[in-house]
Length: 133
Image (cartoon, rainbow, N blue to C red; front, top):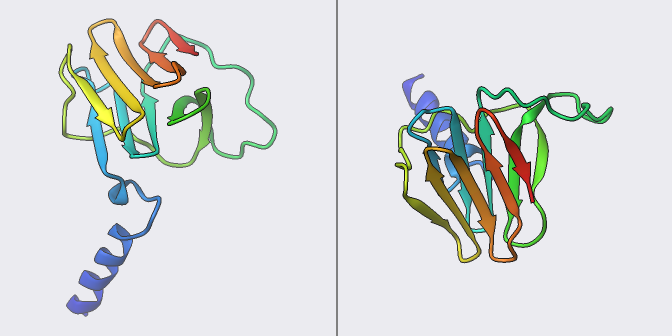
């Protein structure tokens, strides 16, 4: 029985698209924002914000409003998700920038977190403000 459990745990970690298979995870010092990504994208979730999200799309059957993604090219977008990017133990300290692949960076500041691609698109997240650009 023990061997089966170990194998299943390894199989879960190896599933492409699962947060465990992603190359980068981090949280802001407040732990209010958590991010996961690889060389092609970054997704960040915010736990607490005073910003009211736009209406939930009819096609979204899961959580809406607090998850955001930017890819190497194109505009950032809000996501409909059934999981969470929150909870990484690795902290991106205020003033630090995390490079994600060749095209994306995330910078942590006391005012909030900014993630952007080289095209200049991305998002800013804080308790008081959310902006996609």
